[in-house]
Amino acid sequence: MTDYKFIFGVVSILLAALGCSVYFKEIFSGKVKPHAFSWLIWSLTTGIIFFA
Image (cartoon, rainbow, N blue to C red):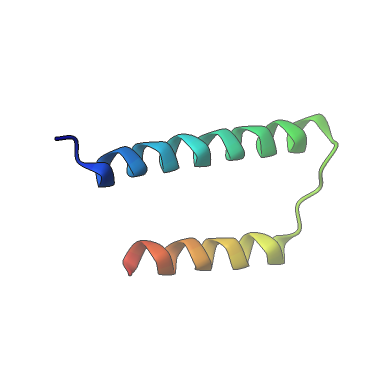
């Protein structure tokens, strides 16, 4: 039997990589200008989830 946690982990990593790649593509093409405060909030959120 396949471990469903592993499958969900792989899918979540792939979706996160896809989302980041699209976001960075938009940043470098000049369509999106990120705000430093939003980067701070998302970094803190991701860090808290990682350590939890």
